[in-house]
Length: 254
Image (cartoon, rainbow, N blue to C red; front, side, top):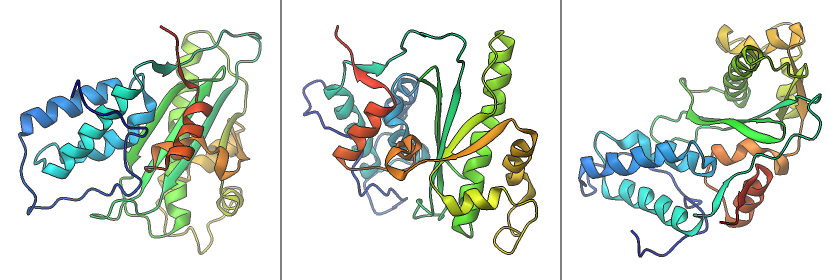
């Protein structure tokens, strides 16, 4: 792949991988080496997280289309070798603000119809934690898949706050959780379960408990500024480049 042609995005917009026994099998050892190395690279290149989460589901029996997607990620890395996470110098150390972005793609997996959750945490305006992960259950409504995504982000927020506290860093409270769905934001503030949410498992209402405690606050943001969108689906070049810039994944001079 050293002489491959670079690409502008790590995945095609129409990326929807499934298990297809009719496709040609590929060397599983080679595939695991490639995906394993790319998963390690996700620690410093969050922009490839979604593409790698998709290909990781086919480690046991990889087929030719799965290898093509993995190779496309390498082609993207080839063209963006100078990019990395930018950690700016803290100007005001008294403003220790932890911000979270949560988003989900409903029924994004064509095979089992499970949704994909994504979240991004920024501390001192630098990204420190992110995730692109398929949800554990099949969501029966848009309300449910949003609640599941919020719960995952809320659990991570509680853990990050505890970790920073052990480092003797007190973050500003409440922690802001940015969501772009006004209807589900209103639902999170209702203290009783209504017809839209009574089928959702109780554990996914953990967010409401944190809101009542004052540990978290819900902030509405437009879809255009929803940074976690990058971790839920493949997107067009313009949208991808805009989000990559907003999460401070920049080209650094070497």
